[in-house]
Image 1 (tube, rainbow, N blue to C red):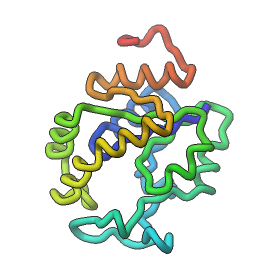
Image 2: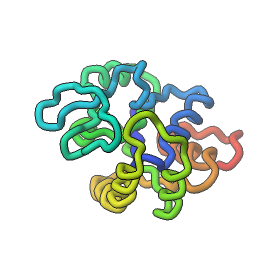
Image 3: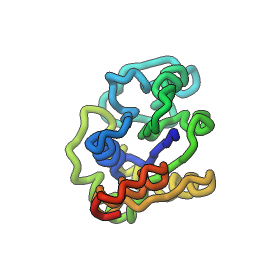
Image 4: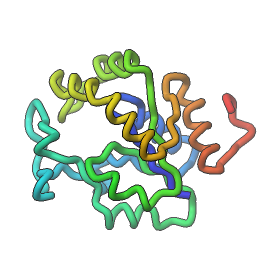
Length: 177
């Protein structure tokens, strides 16, 4: 089983992937630079670039996955979880058996974005305001594409239990099932 988990920034992808790893699952965060799975590219040319300072104009840039590297990560016979929010993810859906979109209430999304530690790249106020504005559009697109939407507002154990169940990995001795 191959499972792709996505969401807008600030919805909790990193927390979910970290919990899957704690549970011993094969789980990859597309933002982990050591994986060499993703890179910032110029949208029109797909040429790699360094992160700009301040505002990241997502009309010009795209955070894309390398398809060959993705295939390598998915080559295992075991269940594999890949988590990310990628500019080219629509072209990669066919590699996955299940597509999951994490959701939170828009007020919770705003609270999380504004209160999380700022990363070195792309977390300025202008980018966060854009993320908040685009959130309903992203969720509508995920739903229209057939993603299973899982609410990530509650305890992380509950969210990950739902994802494991969707992947056919039911573990009855876990609390919160």
